[in-house]
Length: 387
Image (cartoon, rainbow, N blue to C red; front, side, top):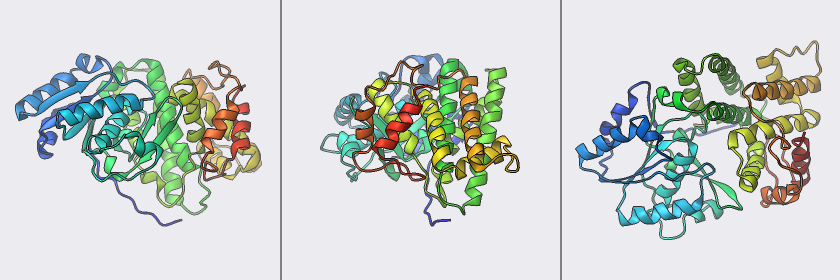
């Protein structure tokens, strides 16, 4: 077990009616000018917009908004909102929605106090001198960005991340009732995203981190159980609550304790979604299937352990390598049960851009910690993802 420092100051306000705490939370941060970031009119349908307007009006907070966030959020919108925020003297950014809105809000919170281009944080990795506070009202169960220290943005050609503890939201309001209106596809790609965050943390080469191992295994079991409940009854608010909480647990860095997570699969998927603008959760379903097949033949021990502990593959009946392949098959079956595509061919993607994407992914060296991947390894994984 390796040494670690764990820090996450996000306040979680969870459950039905949790949005009614918004006024109290904004008052605590002495907000004077708020920028609301969201995507589409759903926040008005759900009644969230009225809650926000009422709170800001009662507190005398200046209010501005933008509802044009798109999946795989772009730096172009961040630049636009940064300029708007500077003109309006914004001192708090509130995101409503899922990962796209939250990551956009985080980037704007970096950009408003900064004199340069906010893309500098993502492209150059510079450290901010100041970051505005961010709050979240989560309406999905997927990215976990509501309690993470990371934001992901696209420039069109590049999809890059930035990490800093100061962009962890100050609070996250999570009412699982809000997720009931999601289309089934959005619900299930969200579940795939949550699973991918758990798997990235599980696939570590650290052999002595039992506490974190068992926590992740338990979280995966809980996710599988509640996904089945939602397949049976999409209105099951208890299952939705479990999955919404799991989304945060999977990505608030607590499950990094004592180990180095992998993240190789995410680097590959980021190239795919940058190149083809595919949905991240479905992209992760495709890449996870291919990565686990590749790794079963290269370094199976972690995959075999998970296959035994979560899916019951007995070490007396199957070799380590066989159990690793069983894991890949079980995960593929799960993604298919959710109605997701599991191959690049199904997504209409061929191999013409593999070289370009693999070169971009490895421009700073190998990716992944469990088994570092060079350019050729990434191409091999992408080929496995075809069919």
